[in-house]
Image (cartoon, rainbow, N blue to C red; front, side):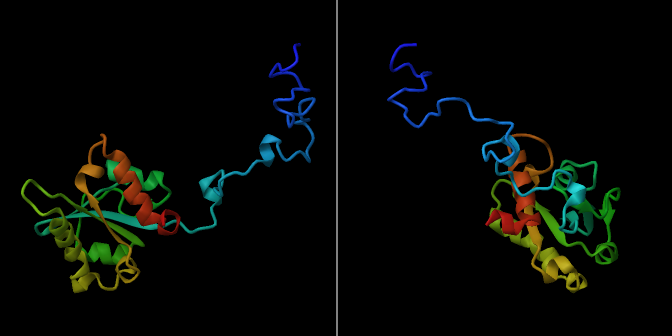
Length: 178
């Protein structure tokens, strides 16, 4: 070894470097890998202390209400983020179905087309749920957990898939996304 060699423990360039490697087998060592700070997430989602959130993803098309279930990309995003789809297999739902399911969170799908005002299209879609007295008793409505999501962000995988995941995450975990 030459003086000044970066691997030299007596290196004056790096006087803080220990003379020998730390004992990583020492359980009191704060640098031991299992003593490092970890995200506050359970290793098994089943162990979570928060109750699972019940969710619907709906699109109002004329008089029909389309439900995005477990076989859709949007439904997969929801379940992958730890929520429960309350209508997994149904492609269409009626108002009575939605009221009886009483989800904690409802995602409302909207799609502005060329020439449309995107904000107006979004608000019109939300209003189909928010302004209908049949839905006023829903927990999602009372707790302001109605979340707009653009069709392109959750219908087909592509460059905007991350936008859909972020929107769904923000709706499910608003306190984590402030």
